[in-house]
Length: 418
Ligand SMILES: [Zn+2]
Image (tube, rainbow, N blue to C red; front, side, top):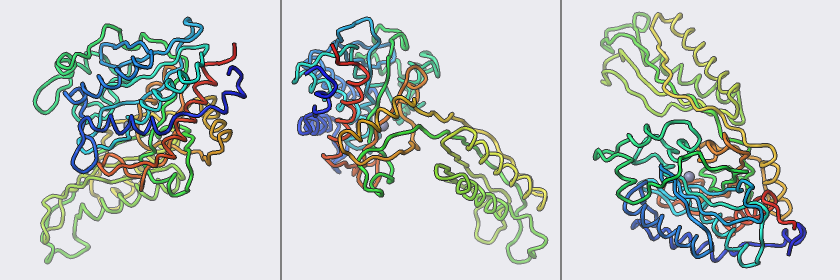
C-alpha cells in the first residue's frame, strides 16, 4: 500500500480508539462519569505514564521538554524532515469529561497504531504531543505548555505560577518527574493538526459530523464601572436620579447588539455584575460589570470594541454619569492555515462525512502551534454541545470519523509515496 489512492481506503480502528479513551478516563474517574485529572497532579502523572507506555508499545520514542510537554515520535523515511504533529492535552477541569483534549491525543495515537497495522511508512516523521496544563484550572495561564513552546510567555513565568496551596509549576513538575531536558520551542514542527470535540452546539444542531475549523475567535476582555449616586428609591423622582444601573443596563444591551451586528461569529457577553450597594430600595450608586467580546477577525472584534466605547461615551454625555472601561486582556484571532483548512475539508469530503466550516470560540493548543507552523483543527460534535462537565459525551461514530479525517490529513502532509 503506497499510493495515495490506497491510502484513502485506510480506516482507523474505532473500537480500539474508544477503548483507549475509556481506559484513560479511568485515571481520575468521578462518580458522575467524568474525569478529574488536574494538571501536574499525581493523577496527571498516572495519565501521562499510561499514554507514554502506549506510545512505546506502538514503537514510538518519547521526549519531554522543560515545561513537561511530551512528544511521541514515529520515525519517517526522511528523518531530516520536520515531523507532522498532532495532539492536544490530557489534563482536565475538576469536573471534566472523557473527551476534551484526551480525544486529540488518543486519535493521534490511533493514527500511529493504524499505520503500524498496515506497515505504512511515511516520508516525514509523525509526532503525537500532549501539552502541559491546557485547562488552566490548577495553574494560570491556560494553554501553558504550548504557550511556553510558542514563546507567548517565558519558562520562568510558567514555573512561578502557583496553585491555591502555594505549590509552583516547577515543584509540581519535579514531583511527578516530568521536567525534561529539551528547551521548549526547540523542536521543529512541519505542520500541526488537532482533533477536538466542538465544546459547542453548532455541529449537533446542524446534524453535521465534521467541523472544518477556520480559526479561533479573537477575544477582548474589559471591566466596566458606571458611577452614579445612591439615593432612596421612594422620595427621589426619576428626573433627579443618578442611577448607575440604568446606564449600565443600556450599555450591556449594546454589548449584545454590537455582537449581533457583526455576525455570524460576533459574540458579546456580560457574565459578571456587581451592584453597589445592592439593596432593594436604594438607587444603585455604582455598577461594575465584565465585557467579553469575540469575533473571527481582529478587525471585527475591534469594531465591536469601538461601538461599545462610543455607546459608553454617549450614555455618559446624556446622563452626566462617568463610565470607565478598562481593558483586562486581549487574545488575537488566530485563523488557521488555508492549506490545512482545505486539507481537512477535502479529507472529510473524500471519506463521505458531512462537514461544514466552523470557528472555535474556545482557545486550544493549536492556537499557539499555529504561530510556529501551518496548523488546522478537526471538530466533532459533542452531546448537547456540553463540555467542561462530567456529562460531556460524544458518539463513537463521530469519534471514529474525526480520527479518520486526522489520519488522511496526516498522511497527505507527511507523504506516503516512495
Ligand atoms: Zn481541550
